[in-house]
Image 1 (cartoon, one colour):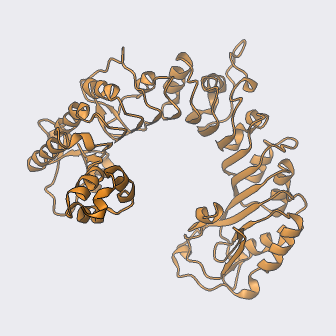
Image 2: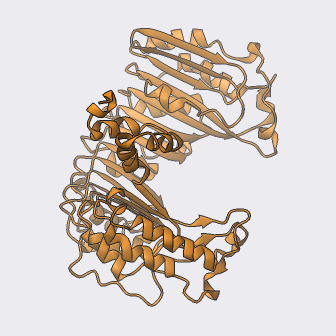
Image 3: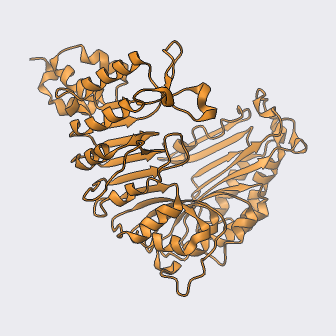
Length: 490
């Protein structure tokens, strides 16, 4: 017996999953053991496109159906994937638009097709054929009663992402008696050619006892009403909502339905307005008692900073004055701050740090319009002066372990497309001296990333060794390359 045949197929599955698809095809052709192991991976993901997206028609936002020969091919392919022999291997299904490739037969506009949704109804009817399906992603797809019913009956389906999806023309969906027992659900609905359906019935289908992560981005008027009127979701840990800040009383009532949320992300618009009501049903102090991480606009900070469990903030782009207007007093529980600030001065950053005296992680992305007057010998002197001022910044937290400051410059012309020029060393700050001074003020500092857009300094202590790198010539637009791995210590 060959040595590899002594290992169970499950072990080979764990090993082979790291191979690229081309290599899996080669492994498949070796012998029966590897054929069985690799087949489960090769057939685990079904990608099906019921509609075409023609680049030439994108301005009109009109989708197309494949030509007759393309329809026949798609139906034959779907029959193969949904066959009794192949379907049990499918774990993930993606229903999305297909971009017309060069040389393909021109697809037909939906309005001119005899059966414009034949491929869509075919995949929906066959969803029940995939009993081990775990993940479904649908973009610009139209659903019907059969499709929704089939999804609710899949026993292992744990993750669904719905984007720009509606209901097939002439169809209605009766959600009575149906439940989606998924642990992760994402719904985004924006104006799209196949939409025209608010999508909120999806939220009504979710089983509150199973759901752990929820994203609901779209028609907040309808979404918020359904959340407020529905039952609570007692196990949701991660929540992402698209929210209208002009309806804050309803917003608070919606957040109250998620009592154990640890991670909150808000995509919002408008000014904070509390509707005129005699007695608000929910107060800000009543919601999100276990919140640990918040990501979104700084406008919500006044109702979140008093949460005793909140330690991590990730803030959307704002001006320093907008952020400082939301900060009152010290918030020593905040250990991590990631923020994108528009053209801050060193004094602004010092004032912000004054409100967060116990920061362990500070990551600031500076967004600014490039000014010719600030460049000398190919160097962004705004960054040079900022980095130099860090040494004497009054309120830099002594608790810092990781510090990153990066410049993201916006050019009025095509200057950003020019070839990079090596920055003059005499215009670049003395990074070693800056690092040494920062370490004296912050003894625990172990990671430092200073990116001036066209020059960069990286230093960290990792696993008992020291890594340091300085680059004096950076191609514009690549400032974030490698940052996540560097920041996370990988």
